[in-house]
Image (tube, rainbow, N blue to C red; front, top):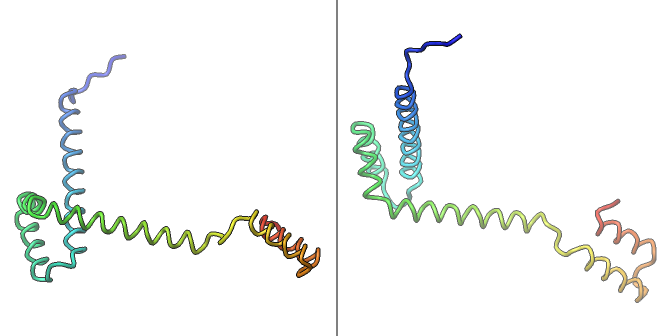
Length: 133
């Protein structure tokens, strides 16, 4: 059984093209609005002017913003990424163990040899270093 359709391949292709163009347009709007609200180098009035321009003349407003502010957008985006990366690095350093288990065990053995701690305390240090309790 052959199904006949009145929706030919070129119309499917055109529909897909329009859908993806619309998706890219929405993505550009999110990028531009996020950049406008993220800016700290402009006043509120300038931000409102950009938003009004984008709402009244959507395509033209977005393209003008992208052309006029492309360097600033790149710098602000890179600065935000570096800030996020440094915060993540600091978080990882704060939750990570300060020294590796072999160093902790070696220090415990040295303390045991000196007589500062006994065998039970050394075993406890060793269990803690290896992550077993």
